Image (cartoon, rainbow, N blue to C red; front, top):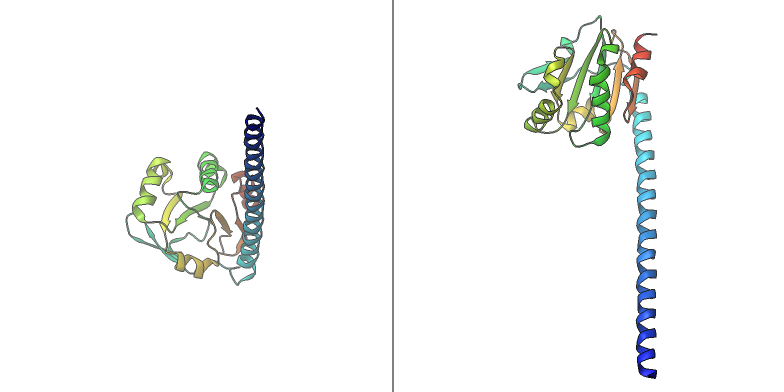
Amino acid sequence: MDSICHVYFNKCSIKKTYVKRQISYGIIIAFLIVISYMVYSIISKKQQIVAQERGIKVMPNFSFKTLENQTYSYEELDSDNYTLIVFFSTTCIYCEYQLEDLLKNYKQLLNTKVLLVSVEKINKIKKYAEKISLNNYKPEIVVLRSSIKNFKEKFGIWSTPTVFLYTPSKQLVFARTGSMQTDSIATYIHE
């Protein structure tokens, strides 16, 4: 009888040790997630500040590719319109929210040319554009592709989503990392 009780209590203490270990791992993982989020937030904010401080106060002379592999450049923008550039990724959930809101409310952006720029492969961008029916918004919204190097050199940032708004005279109104509601963007245009 003593040996049976001894085995039972050993099993209980093993289970308790196992549970304590699992709880410890859970706490460590939660801590790492919180730290990772904090680091990401700090880096995103710093990139936003750097973008605004880096001589990007005037729209850079850029050249990107359309989904039809045609060149689309700075010179093609109408000098009477604002320009909204949204740097996005097809796999970014925040980009999806950004684009969903933009497409739903794009009529608030009167006199604004919207450029959606991604660094992914053209076929991937095309599939995504078809999925969310971007062709229905031409010519007001243009989907473009850039290399990461080209975009980073021109705009000083590579986090997605990032939103840049430029005046008709190509002066930076704001650069913001993270999604931004269309009605908030519209307030800058209608000031």
